[in-house]
Length: 340
View 1 (cartoon, rainbow, N blue to C red):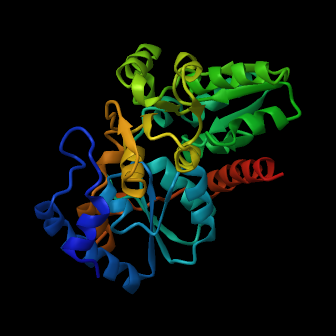
View 2: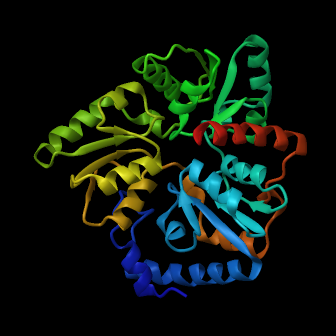
């Protein structure tokens, strides 16, 4: 059982723009009963809650058993002994948990639970591309549906995409669905002097698409005396990456801030990550604007409690077994390449 004071001490350092993630004593008093009820029900039902770093801090630090980026959560989902997995993120991530745990109940506690990137292509679209590019190895970002993964050869995350694309023996690659990440993969292969012919599709993350180099220059000028460090996610455009001090997945960005001796940082990714950093490293300063993903921020304690108590049919993730098996092969290929 957590107390109001304990929750307030955990979250008081979170200071993001807007009212979504501001924590005072009165708000903590409202949250604590929900958090305690959820944590008790988890034990009763042998359930585990996985939360992406982009969801609200009261989930991450109140009820989540595991939190991280897509790759880490995929591993956590694979290793859990719980009967029920509640995936606080977006539906395609919960589908990944179901792919890896076909006999477990997997529930998504948010509506809406879409993703501008994952929704940019479906299985039929991949099949059409395969007919057009029969000699290419199809590489899909993990931010895709199970159906899309089922028609691809190997899955990647933002933390392992460069290694996997470089390692694939085929020189012909079709990378989908993120065209901005795909351009960054092309540029990185050129830097590494790795010969690859890479075809891209047109999907984007609407959050990361917003960032531009001019924003970085403004922040550098505004905090010139503090030697601000700029960190960006590979879903940003190449101009942003070229002006950044570090590029990496959310987990890699967390590790960078933990180890770096600088005091001031500007994080070019969904601001849930900044909230995590403010909780875990309150001595450091995080500047710039807060960009929120409406899908990630649709996750609430109230909906988590609801699916624990009385889930609706649409809360469950159900997959066709043929699709699941093919998608599982795609994910296992990712693990094989990434850990070789």
